[in-house]
Amino acid sequence: MDQKQIVISLLAKAYKYRNLARWVGDRETVQRILALADELIQRARALTRPDEANIRRRAREIWKENGRPTGRDEEFWLQAEREIRDAEMLANEVGDDQ
Image 1 (cartoon, one colour):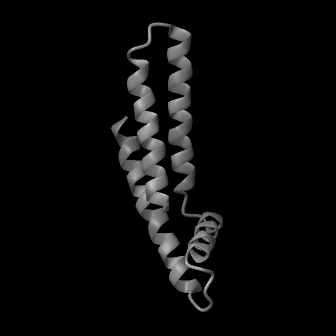
Image 2 (cartoon, rainbow, N blue to C red; image 1 turned 60 degrees about the horizontal axis):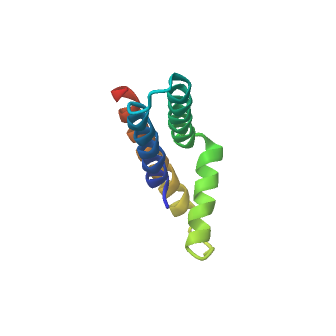
């Protein structure tokens, strides 16, 4: 699963919880559900930080997914950068909608 898919999954869950909160009558439960939704959104945004550690982690995952080949490190690094950048744009678009 690439970064964008993970971010989409986290954001989908967050919005599902936000919609669920509308149907709950207990104020404390609503606050807890909304806090969980906010935490999921923050996790999604944390995954999309284009810092070297996130790129390195994702590039390594891609390398492993492809059978640990030699000589393709730059390809995997660029793919990781692209995935993180795309996920960041998605997370920012969703964040602007709130």
